[in-house]
Image (cartoon, one colour):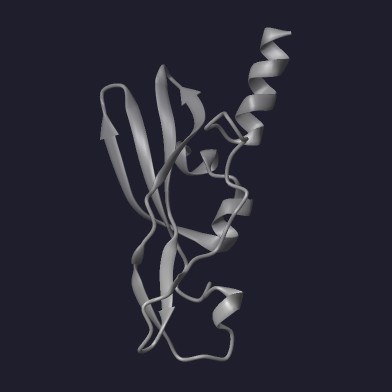
Length: 112
């Protein structure tokens, strides 16, 4: 399916596609942080998954008049027996603009 090519390989280093949702005007590709990406703050400690951070939707392409969004879920970790949460930070989108860099560059190119 051509839609898989809309995912930058940089994202696939840390995330994996878990679900694809299609509607008349858009596709949403859900990507979940890989389970081995435990926060560095917890290195060497016994950790447990403590849910997920709020997701973020990033516009990556508009293909065949449909928008393609990447819905990114980061894992939330804690040390076993603790209540303090940790998660990784990623440079997933352009500040102030929820698009991938590639899509921003494309828009700049066609918009002058």
